[in-house]
Length: 475
Image (cartoon, rainbow, N blue to C red; front, side):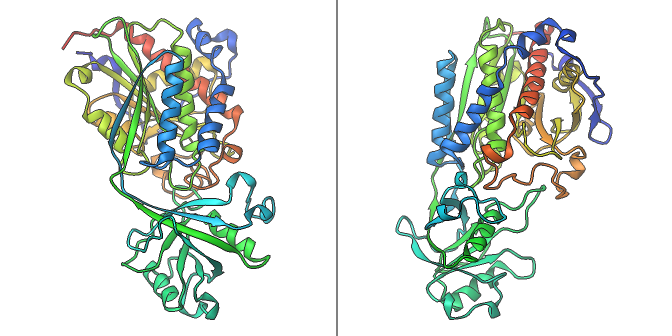
């Protein structure tokens, strides 16, 4: 059994965050093993992974064809660099999905104040009300009528047979909005989200309504603003489709670099590759996925026989309560659990948002463990002043922590983004978090990605080097 007492220092991290005051340094001040990693990393390769996942594949909700395409991309990559790849399937979350196809949307590219651009496309993925009607592939084609918050007095004869666009509002229930639209003869309803969380502008959602016999779509704030700006220029026709997906399957992609024998410690470097509906997921979390892929490429080339490294693409983080990480950890054998020395989770780095410039290393309980100590040591050597420690249970590292595995999550947040600020709505993540604007073009910056990549990779290598001195015994 691994002596996990040697892997963690059990003390409370102040108020949940601790700043690492590292002086600015240069490459000559780095130790040889830091230079080995940092000089071999290629941020351009990682950036290309982000581009492919978020632009070529796009949004990757759990259990969908797009998520499977992303899993295949990861598996192909890991096989090409010479790792042993295993696909771990499991039952996924039921989803109510909608599509809004905007006829002639290309005429509006680059116009208006809401940032509608070519890379947002003309087909927008949304949520849908599970208790609404479903069109399937047939869809409904009609004009969009903007009715504000959907109060009864906002409707006139133009609503009949058309699609009512309305804003989610605390001043009226979604049931009232849908009832008003149905009574006015609307063929379908689009409610756009104007009530974002964790600092974002409002992503797609599942409208919470009683059963109704017309389709009800839960769109993002950006979708609503784009449609409203289009309507200012004249009539807008859309095709609306929605589907209920049940009995879906997701998968974890596990790439393994085995150690010298079956007794060595196991370290997992992981990131979820799925997204929210309608979010291309460049920052959340193609960025983390790309860092795992690039670290795997580099570490494949070096002697790490004293450990077994597992590079894991987790599915179903966004829907189903971290179902991928739960399935993975609950299906570890007793022997694997005994050998597991740490899990490094990367979820949202390299963000192109000025306020979110701090890199956090966060444990699920706020205690500083050995993984976080390696991060602090690496920050000092790299001259990295923007590392903060803290507590968070909002990602896949929590499931590893719950089964007794030391775990940490790396993520970028605003400078004040401690656990107490996480839900403050003060743009602690990025305004494009979970939104259609979490794109390769808008929400990730290669210069910031390179900084975070170097910092995380150095931390990983620092930690696995130290495991040479950790006693193990076969169990």
